[in-house]
Image 1 (spheres, rainbow, N blue to C red):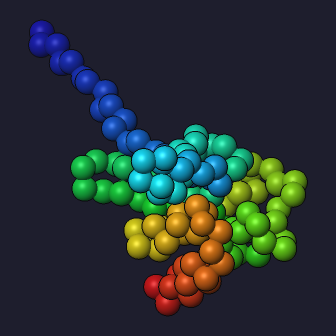
Image 2: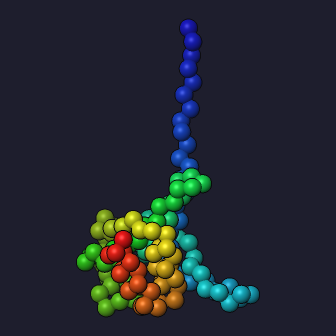
Image 3: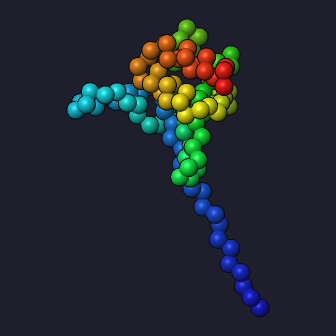
Length: 119
């Protein structure tokens, strides 16, 4: 009788979330976002790396279906985790949104929203 050994396929996906916490490098004076857990309520952008070539970029939407603006007029004061929705986007829009989270430049948010409509 022959025995077959089945190996479970390991989950090789890694996910990183980004919120509004900024870190400034004292040497280069550059601004960068501090990675946070993807299930954190303050997570506004996620990137999931499935393998060496596949990356999925996700951005958080507000209750009106637009990109979430942590500093906007209609920020979500009391939101539950199950109410948070993310949408798939291109890597270019994702990077612009991360830059918006780091710099609070509203023009970048508007560019991201416009490019998402066109995509």
